[in-house]
Length: 506
Image 1 (cartoon, rainbow, N blue to C red):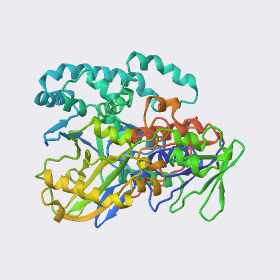
Image 2 (cartoon, rainbow, N blue to C red):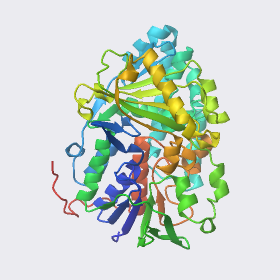
Image 3 (cartoon, helix red, strand yellow):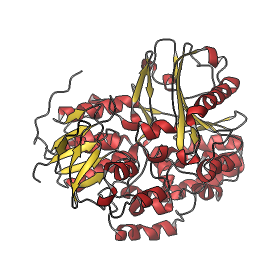
Image 4 (cartoon, rainbow, N blue to C red):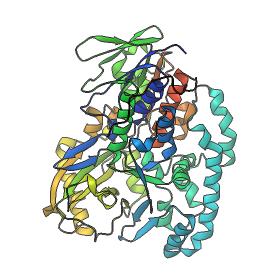
């Protein structure tokens, strides 16, 4: 294929992955990023000597990273390192009793015995079914769904495996204990979905973990971002930070360039948006040039919940706490809480939490003798009408008081670094429509072909990567979207030696 001039908007994992793949094939690739550092949702904050990963922390399927480096004739380990975690998660019930979610099935079964031995046989049956879901659908995660016929081909397996059922309903057919049902149905929350209505085809997320493990990037997720950024520049790619694109300039069915903050237009043969799909269509392309993705259609799509995330560092270690690296604290309410967030779009008084404690694994990301955390609470997106300017501080105080009273004694007096984001951050800083933390919500009618396509239905040379397009949110999925877009743009395999790479430097 002839060398193309390609512009990538945004530097999340989807954009960086696509940019690296296309640069490795010899294309002239330029990446524009709104913020002062790469990463998108995976932006890393540096506060008082602490490195806080802004978004994704659960890293699965190292092969998805490795393939990008292999195509460039490199090794991922020369750019950043991953270490496996086990257990994957420590999940607490409302009484503070913990379930260790191990990699091994036998170890997980022993945990089940502690809560309800009668569920062991049901769990084995559930695992066999999710393995069949994995065999049927895993191969589709890095393939495009551009035609209705692509969707029709998978419908028989969706029906046969009843993968259209809500994930919680699917789990409840095999597991009877209420807490264990929550333990094995929470994964849709990792990709922005409600376990009660996200189809059980998304048990793929749990099987990704079982097949490849859960990993941590030494130095934090930001180290994985930096590694891809360095690979991209080693391949000759150009990066412009602090450069928010204000418009995608179109001519008929062609996207011909992007308008920069100073009003100039940078032209291109191909444009890839790693920005939020809804934001890209609604705010970067005037409505008169869009036929399918009208403002009305964009407004009527279903979007994920949002998040409140509090990053904090303490001047003491909490190695005597109950926490592991990844922790999930489930509220006494489950269905009702999720209904408030997803259906009623009301901010509940109570919460369930995810708590990240990476210094258990990697002391390098914080000053000596300190501990690093982030705690995350799902909340409704901005259609709830919540006044976050008034609500953020009291909400933060309730979450931190809960942690201090139940898990981290004396927390209030130990904090020496803190930062917080809420739905306004997702809307105003990350350009996520309605402040939805995971973009387009995963559902049966927003799955595969029904999601916004990786190649725009509006413009022949505009492509989408990231959480809002196929296959969806989560690090493996957005990396897969980058692969899909790159192969749609240039399906030819990389010719090793076609480019002279710069040497790896320490």
